[in-house]
Image (cartoon, rainbow, N blue to C red):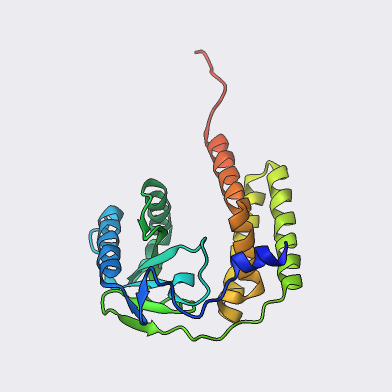
Length: 231
């Protein structure tokens, strides 16, 4: 990984993304469109009683560390979502795969978040209340290129081993392990943690998606019956 590549993954700006923000406030047209998307996603979930508490955006585009690869993380904050976590995850994946949604050219990624879950992000903005829940602070981070490169190399090695394993359980364990480390890094050091930057680097290179597709392939093979039997 070159310094230039790290700068693409981990840029830092003096202002919030001007395509979304105006003087620290979400642009009105952007907010209305995101609320429309959130409502569409809520209907897509087909849950009889969705105990919605808020609709928020977070992640890099709610802070100063956005890049050309950054999504808009749009969260439906739902009370009791943890009780239906598998359903919501499956629906979220299906929705994000089915609909290619963008705001000012920026992809929108949908999530269902349990209201009791602590969410770690540079900034969190409530669309329902049109205000910051957690306002991002402009503190330019110090990033160790060597540490990020080392961590990314470690992750890539684990992914390559999984891709050669032809073992669904091994691949799923590897994916869960990498996501777990990323989450721990976010909780400890935020968006510019070594673990998160290493994850973003591999994601932007397509390696995370490659493993995800391989898991889908192995899962499909496990559920299929190739041989034909005659009675």
